Length: 320
Image (spheres, one colour):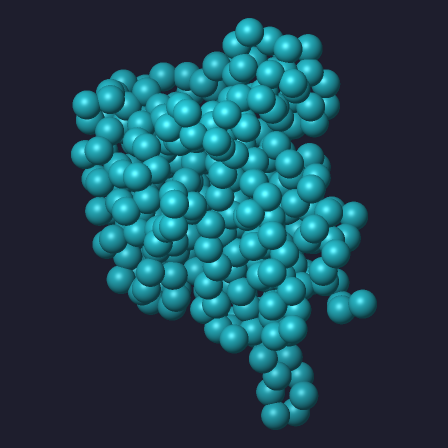
């Protein structure tokens, strides 16, 4: 935004709330496979405080949930009710829509056919990728990181079979959730990750071309991280390299935002694109938080985080 004297103003064009990896379950606290404490019942309190904070600001146009709203340890017979309970908390946001994306823990508990309607993701054939433009100058692209996946699809579905083939070829371990003996980014080939299929890649190409024609800045959102510099190698999208090679063909993408790697992370990639992975609500000790909001300007986005979620200023490179 530019004032009458030609100087940039400090007022953002818009803002939105965000949170990741709530992974709520009505069970006792536990630990991750790496021994990190997980606070299953407390996580929904983090979400409640987030919604209250977002509503207090009264300026956020929408909220983005970066996936995994329910935990894999949630008892199976409680899965549907637990997902609905968390969705109901999101629905208390008064400023506008809540945009969800699916994560691996969601798919452990519910098939896509039940999960996507609960998350209000408009879908054809179970696909969970889409885009939206809150203002004409910006477009958000939400990817389906489990398009090719061994979880969430029926066992005999072509996407399941393709995922199983990838895991057989890329991961020699009997337990396909085990990255042992895999080095560097190859550690991503485990069952709790996934990839984008050919159809989604083609769709993404078309969206980025359209955004370029319309002179829009693009923010890409994905449950799985897209850059090895911003996250653990074992948490990356299977074909992150293919996706980023496509994104790098265009100049419109300014930031890629993700969840999944609970510790969080940040990098600027070789093309100047900001890669921000958000800290998990699940791992907040009682009384602490991990949520935030982003103010969106013409030349940057500014993450204002709470407690465990670190604030991050992300300035865009000038157009080449």
